[in-house]
Image (cartoon, rainbow, N blue to C red; front, side, top):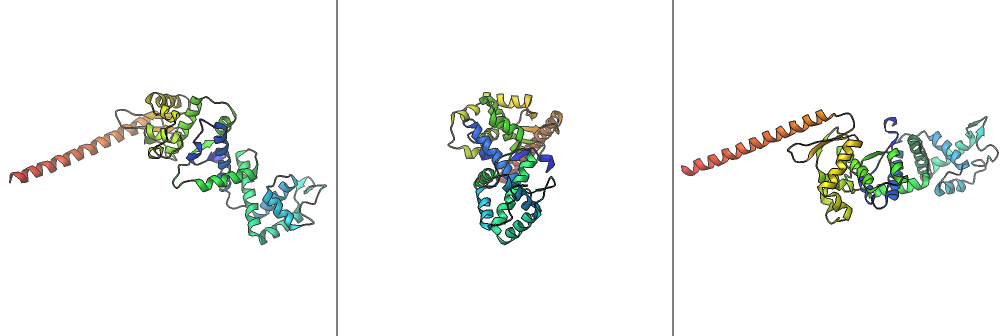
Length: 302
């Protein structure tokens, strides 16, 4: 968890509309990313779940459903320590309240599920070192989760970039750079390098997994970045400022990598080796076709 503590993951389709409504799009990216991270915390200590619930009850940080569940218990203990609010000797440890709450959770599966989800979201916020409304993030995250198509690309982005693009004004060209960067990252996945082309990058810049899904999508910005000049300008800037490397020489498409793990020399070697293999395969195919034609001609003469 620590290695990815400041990164969130989200479905590619969420970036659609980023040019037109940047703030709303990046707000959704963040909310879903927090929710997705919360689901990674599988084995939560039951006592800790109860302890967090009591703490958030005293600090008015529970959603409506959880508040209603606790109110329905009609407890003389839970949430009634108005003087110390669960603190004993400077430490938050309301043992009796937690004990009674855990008993209630064991008897009510829905209440237990809500409590665990709340705690998981709490852990997700902490792991990302950010704050927010747990109830709203959980609701939005679940709604998005239900809409994710099968085999949807799931790029990752640092929370630093998400906040920067959500909260600060950005030019169209700056937005295009980030979207192209995410497109390339979604193509690479866990691979250090990969061969791709401008059509695929363009499609993913606008939130589509592949070019076939863009049929009928004819916005002015999509058509603009479909032109060689504008897409090349974006890719060039990624190479100059975003640690992106590309290599192509007399070949269809190009090889791409991000970061410092793969140097340009390595990328060039991989591309040239791939090109040579393709030429060898093409040569074998031509020889096979020539042999077939020669055999057919010989048989015809007989």
